[in-house]
Length: 366
Image (cartoon, rainbow, N blue to C red; front, side, top):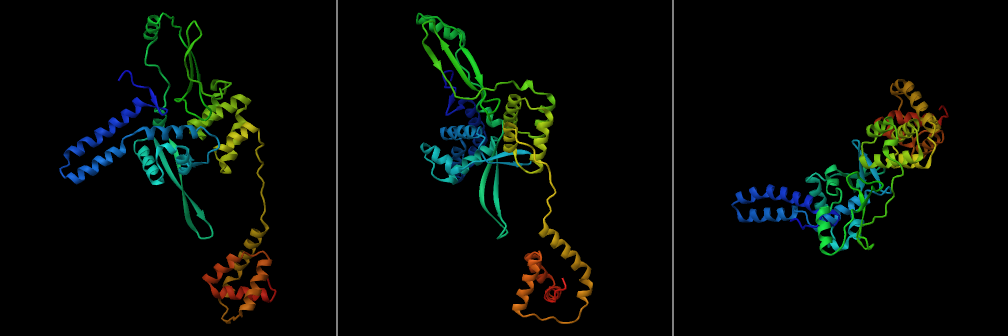
């Protein structure tokens, strides 16, 4: 297999074949031991479904590419950054996959998770009106083993072998000039590589150029204090690389970085805010104590009710209010800043106190 193409669909064939070997070993023993033919057929079908193929190669490459984008929706889960992947967008982007069902795509993602390439997180939106969760959004976190599939480019032939071939052609071979560039938002194991090999007659025999933004400064130019802060607070390699890039480019000091990260965590802003704040030099908002008069009024009223609770609860006088009187009293209390939901809960818990409260409002004693 020395003539095997190094990458297919963006991933290393050798790495994917290693995964398939693990899958084969996992199923082989079980299938051979299974006597029942129907069960054996099910296992064979499951085995074939687990094997990685060209469709997986292009899906995995798509994930690597979009995870380099800074425009993705992110979510912090247990200290790890997860990013939302739109199934419909993926299927529209790669129609040649022949996958037109989100469930089929979901099974492939389940396979990636089973073999340690990704971790999935299902986010559900909470509806305050119905007090129920609805709508599911799949967020992914790419593991280090995922990036192992995209390690550095290599040429199978040694320099001596290429020189020998060139000599047979009556040409000379010069060592290629190699420039490695790391994509913004990418991973240290996945460099974009520019390789140009030129013979004396200036004929380019290989060129693989990717349009990326080269980092202007090395991460070694920032202090160890900043590196430690990023590793402690961020804990996501791709995000850390992006932040190191903007910190070195703009010569940002430790105190500035710390203040932005501290405010972001306290305000639940996310990693995207940290990056933009440092890049655009946004000022860190000064904390202000904002008084909510409506809340204060409600709390004041609750305290007053607590003080009068015993007196009201001991009041044996039956209070009867018409619907018109009840609505009028509620209107008076709401205008005074009392929360309508608070009154509704009071009615459920203790109707006697509720009626006494409304009656007091009608007598203008509140």
